[in-house]
Length: 169
Image (cartoon, rainbow, N blue to C red; front, side, top):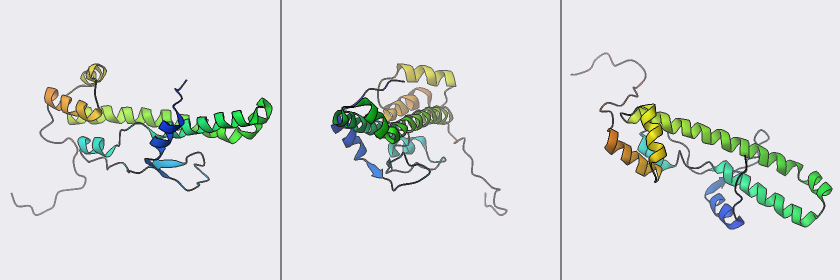
């Protein structure tokens, strides 16, 4: 897949909102992570949207930064053979970041669809039709679906475990 290359200023501004990571031998290609940790699965959809659980994946911006580094090294070296040697790790990093990005985005889109269908009285077909036609932010889409389809009166998510023995009705 071909990705648009952003300017260095835009990429650095997006990365400034992330938290730098210490080196990890198992995830060596990742340099930053999101500052906000995802909310628990039982939290309401609106809270997850406002927390940024479904925001654009930060792996994209890391891959863009890696792309900028590769371009700068190419301009410095002026030799294709030497550039290929000295950027092996950077090119592997870029490849893995784009793979992480595509996997993360696919998971987020699947989770968003699931959450909307569980929260509102809508079918999968309703969701797909509305998401194609709607133009706005995810929070705006939430309120649009709430107005058009309505929320379930009782949340579909139940608490685990058995009920207490002695309850007062």
